Length: 234
Image (cartoon, rainbow, N blue to C red; front, side, top):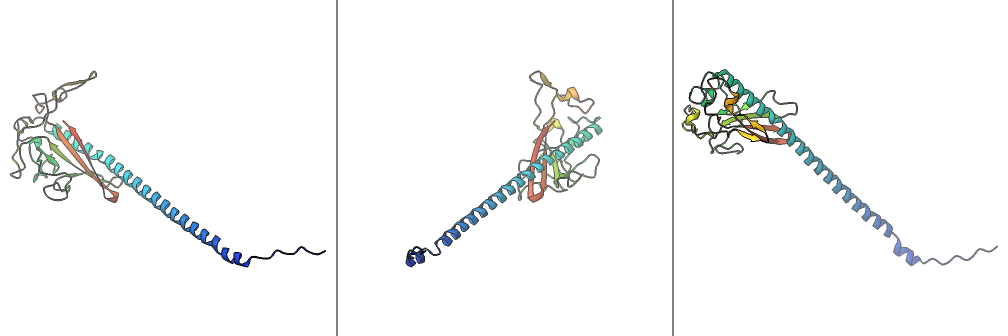
C-alpha cells in the first residue's frame, strides 16, 4: 500500500511562532510572583498591626494594677491617720506635698495634694513628669507576666498649694480650693452614698463631701508600647 502524501510544511510560519508560548509563560510567572509578594507583605502588615494592638491592649489592662495599688495606698494612709482631721489639719499626709519626704511614714513620691496645669503627663520635654522614682511609684512585681512595667501618680484635684515654692506648703482641704465630689445621687433607685455615710472617725469630712482624686497609671511594654489610664476616686 502506498502512504498518503505528507502535506508540505510552512517553515516560515513555524519560525514565526517559535518562543511565543514561552514569552507568555514568563510574563504570567512574573505576574504571579508579584501577586505572591504583595500578598505576603499584606499578611505581614496585618499580623504586625494585630500584634501591636494586642500589646497595646495588654498594656492598658496592666494599667489597672496602678489604679489598684494607688487605691490601696490611699486606704492605708487614711486608716493610719484616722485620728487627724484631714479637712483642717495640715499635718495629715494627704495635705502635704511628698517630694523630698519619701522616707517619712506614709509618704510617697507619687502623691500630689494639688494639680499644676503646667506639668504635662505625656510630654517628652519641657515641664513634665519624668515617670521615674523621683515623681512616681513603681508597681511590683516589675515587670508583670506580660512584660509590662507600670507606674502611677496620685493628684488631689485642688488648686492650692501651687508647686512653687518647692516644696509647697502644707494646705488643709478647707483652704485648698478643691474640686469636690457631688452630693447624693439616686441612679434608678441605687443611691450613691456620701463619704460621711461611709467614713467613721475624726478624720472623716464633716461637710459631706470629699475632694476628687485623680490616679494616672502609665504602662510601658514590648515594642515601645505606652498606655495611660486615669481614674477618679474620692
